Length: 425
Image (cartoon, rainbow, N blue to C red; front, side, top):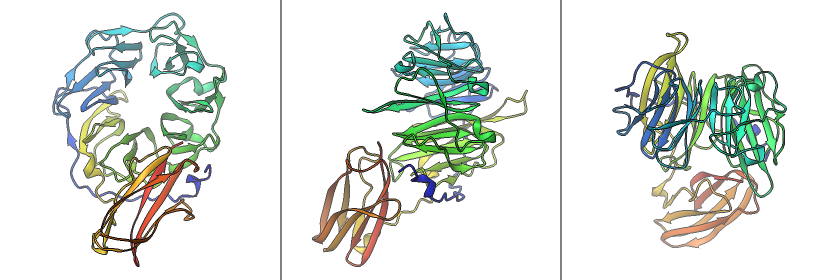
């Protein structure tokens, strides 16, 4: 499985511009956007110089929610445990708010660098439940979000002290933490006391790693040299979108997508995928600047653009587009005229098991089979005569490695459809 995505062709195609991007800037001052974060169907925006804004009406109007925030040069925002709780990373220190009005300055003993790019959950095995990533001072950990802070920089060097993002996963066998820096990625495994530089496959601008995301043991990194992945701790980064300046990437779980997920990557251009290996370039409609903030609520994708007109940091505006219009052009090969309709498996992505449903409008001989990405048959789920009706077949994948699989329905001599499903480990 470590070679899974290396052997998959990347397919790029221009998406049709089904609808224009809608500018939604009412109430915003002229400051460049730095991050977007959804709270249910509200959206919070951070800016470099204007602080934090929130919209309750899908971007039609933005309200200043700075309260007593002590520094308005905000690099990043992240959600916390409740609807209004939020971590705020600023160039003047980390802040937290429980009501988006009163902000607590979390700078305290041990935090020797207060230009903060990342402030969010940490890894208790790395020294604390909360972590701060700084612009040049490395990373700090604490058991409390207010500190005191302890430097956790063993193994870092050079631009590795410019920390942009952290993430990871845990299972029964290990605790894994990955850190995105301007000097590449660093890993810590099973409570390691220090970081290990893991940059095989990265060079040049690809060592400027700005953001990461993941699903199970699949990790994606957005770099100034493209989008790269590592699967199952292989230690080798493979290219998914090469030679692109990318600032961010994220995964969205949504019923809008036929696979249940949408993965995005943005920078000078924008891309999306519903399976991690087929990527479609988005038409950004000629909007000036590059994307420096992006996220989605249940209905719409929001993008924040930055230009280089004002001291290298100009506001290019916030734009919105419905998610279902982004997906225009995805093939749907279900052929009800052939006597059957194959549905997307549920849940998807899935862990141990999932269910596949199909409907027959004519009786006939039915074959339902599962294949891996190389076309090897994994399992036959149905193989025999069936009458008109709807059938739901369970698929137990507990014996399989994580990755992407396909299931194909055939009725008589008619191949109805093949769909993708994603097994997460």
